[in-house]
Length: 85
Image (tube, rainbow, N blue to C red):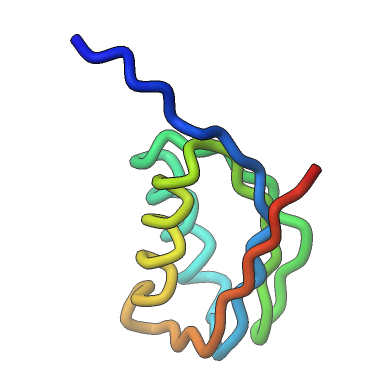
């Protein structure tokens, strides 16, 4: 078994577009769980979702890629990320 240490990070992710929160939030929760990340949602609207994600940087990168594709009902225009702390 490998003891590779992954870089842990906490980042604020701001997703903007035509987001349909009723479809996108459960999708986000499923993918956060699959990737083993933790999340805190701060702001939700039809145009913007702001959340903090904690976990290995590589998995946060994967979450960003997944969110950019998102569920079929959602159109993501932009994702901004900022490292916290």
